[in-house]
Image (cartoon, rainbow, N blue to C red; front, side, top):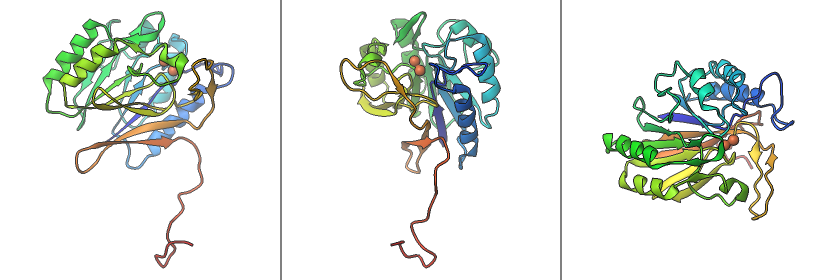
Length: 273
Ligand SMILES: [Fe+2]
Ligand SMILES: [Fe+2]
């Protein structure tokens, strides 16, 4: 089983650049072409929020137009830049979504690993939250299939990253989530977006992490007074591959044209010196 994750597409329309610098529409088109060209091809893509930069309906229209080029199904959850009404309108034909303007949580049972999407958004605020209602839903949902390996995906990370301005807007009530996760040992991975940088951590006894963005990256600044800033590092998607022994391993796949692949060995089978 191979799954892909892209995140934080921050789509702009009409050729407008995000923050005056980033062509996020082209970046999303490049991501779609990249995912379709992977061999083997991922069987599905999870897209973890901040889909539209300012949550405008026309941005969701362009988003849907571009991702309709994906050769595999995709599952969306909202981020803090998304506007939940426009989000629900745009994905009305996505039957897995509640689509009611309330929390957009769901579970997908179609893959070797169960996928549980969590809505961490708080209307009008950049930070996330998993309140008691949301945690109760998660607790009950995880209790349905205690034997099936499960991957949880959400926009806001529940752990600190060391990037101070982003840590001020991470997922609140992390302790509550931590307690729920520890009750359900089939959870094998938690993957997030929001910080636009790849990272991993052992959290709640589970391998957790953040996928890189498809366009701009948050600057890697671990100083406590580091200002909010971004850099144009190579975009990437994250892959989750279930190996023959049933484990889930993650890879980053960089999006762009890179030299290679070049062989290690020459035609005689000797290591090239
Ligand atoms: Fe973002
Ligand atoms: Fe975000």
